[in-house]
Image (cartoon, rainbow, N blue to C red; front, side, top):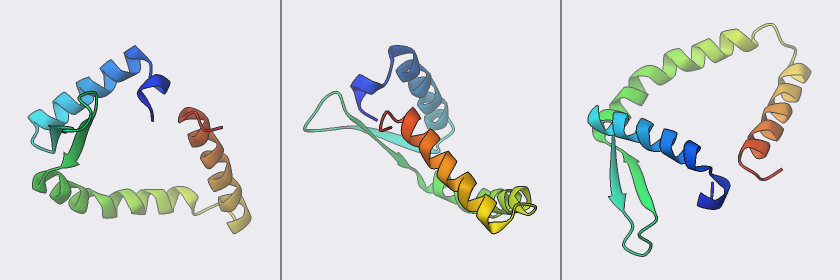
Length: 92
C-alpha cells in the first residue's frame, strides 16, 4: 500500500500495532537508507517461532470453516475475497 493510499488515521493505527509487536519482540523495524519515509519491518526469530507455533491451528480453523462449502463455493469465496482485498488495497 502506498503512503498516499493510506490515511493518516490508518497509518497511526498501523504504527501503534507495530509498536506493540516490537515491544513483544516479534518484529524489528529498520529505516530505509534510500528513503527516510520508508521503514522495513521484519519478523524476529521470536516472531517466526510464534507463527510456526500458531499457523497449524489457524489453518485447521480455516479448514473447518470451509468444510461445508462445495468446491465451487470455495472458489467463489476466494474470488470475492480477492475483489475485497483489491478494493481495500486501492487496486480495484
